[in-house]
Image (tube, rainbow, N blue to C red; front, side):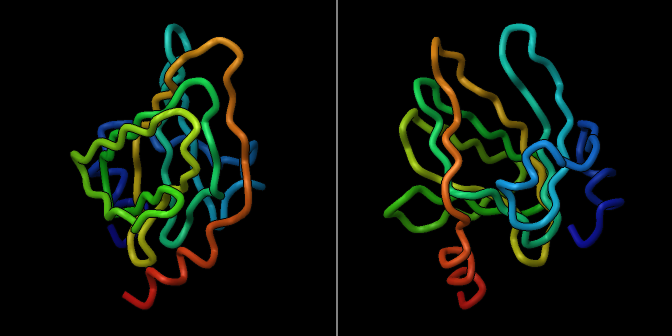
Length: 138
């Protein structure tokens, strides 16, 4: 996905507005469209090329990512990054340190589903700068 218009055509979900509420936890611009919060928290998250979130941990409940458009990456602490494409599903268990975001040359969108739990939450950590820069050399 070379540009946002291409991504909008490919994605069946709205892109939403610029993700200013969580911008401090992202490198680059992301966009957020809340889809529902009735029974589960489900949102469409869109990343501009090169954008990724910081390392983070979902305490108590995990997270599920449903990749819908573009090309991105997911990485768990201590493991190699995984390239993501539309149709890929990432099942993130609770307490796993990880990051995800767009490839350097592509927009990327995924549906983020927060697995509900009592007393859970997200702990935001350091940027994934070093790990992402390694991708640029691959």
